Length: 620
Ligand code: GCB
Image (tube, rainbow, N blue to C red):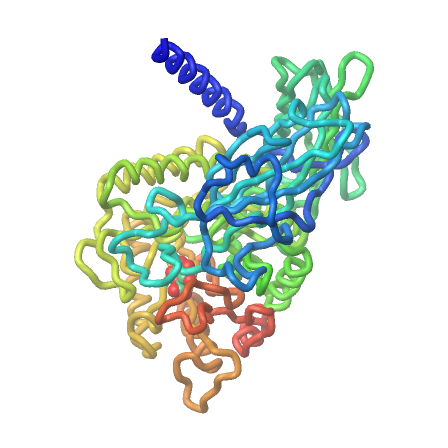
């Protein structure tokens, strides 16, 4: 009898877990459209001060912390937890965030979602003590429908558990035995593993009868006529709709009918005004869906009409060669950590423009969505990267398989989120995967591309092309790594530090090697090359009359040597200086004060001499 009772109990328990898991499946399409306030849709931004408590023993869930935190402290969201307190810099274990909020009574009867902009690294969400979902991976949003968990007559408790434990099964990787890094915390990459709720948390409502689920915009042009293809996916009971496109003094209206909740509309624009860094013109696209009589949902976004392609030496924007001048960046600022900050964003764009840059890479993870919209408006060309940094292909095959799963998820989420930005010209599937034996100086034993690694990268490129055939795709190669990996991309992106990590201090020898190596790389694959990183650590205010490493003079000479080299090569399609600004790293013998000083601006955005140098060179 006792056994039967135990069996019954176990069955109920497993049912409960099944249910909990099915609730937690994250529907990627729910992150396609950023929450929007209009006459039909509603939003509440939950950024501000939240309750916070560490759970280093991971007992919170068992002790029902989801039913309310005790002995908590205050924390700001967005922001990393590592720099907000005096005792938590290196803490990456489990924590809980909690916020109370009312759901407006006017939202009753609508579909209600919670959307977390980024929780690094793994998160679980409860509403009023009930688990609604979980998500793995930082730097990308996730959303869950929560209407059935909400109360209308009192406030609602939102509990979010987050942890950022470094593991070899995760991407980016950490705690890798025999990896090339010796820093603490043991990230397998060169930036601080900031943790927490890094972007806004939103509640938003969608109409319950029918809503627009996704909009995919593809643009092109023939002679002076632009073409905008708009694919609409809806859910619920709408039968038709209208696309309105306006801008540059023109307005086009195209009605459509929905078949199986889908429609594709083509709008043609005579005398189109194309999007480019010189003229980042955006058209407004309004999509609405309706039944026989009433408008049921409405969504509006901005779009730029442009094409992106390449030949064997150049990247082509609107069919014409464009040279990418700019930076590799980080989301990094004192105290805020990796948290999004609009003033810092505005300043970063102002400074990039001031230097004359037209491009950047979202190294080494997707950036805040506001940053992407800003780039559309400001006319920047983006290499949009997933957090696949520090990948490797030797060792445990189960771990390798787990990393591949999460890379695919990242690509799916990233393209779902960013596919409508004219600024995004290239998807980047990984930064600096490591061959088996790679030392920081680029030497070592086995540095070949294993057949398995080629197979897995091909799989990721195929996924990208299947999801988006309108943009380029790339992989950023490490110095000393196999050329077969970078050869897989449409454009070959390489990070090079000859003159710094090798040929230390010898810029003439460094550029000689650049000539040799990159001529060979171009010859082997006949594709354009972008140097996506080159730079020298520079302590602000350090000067010598004869240039020497770490001085501001050396940084200028280093950047000049590389830029002069690029000017001589017609196959170089872009140069991204590493880095835009100094940024926090873990502790290590090559990172003075836990900072990477390769910025041309300091961490608080003061220009070093190199920033003035770039400004004079890039504005010519
Ligand atoms: C690289 C990495 C970047 C590092 C940089 C450096 O190649 O991609 O994350 O910060 O080198 O400064 O060593």
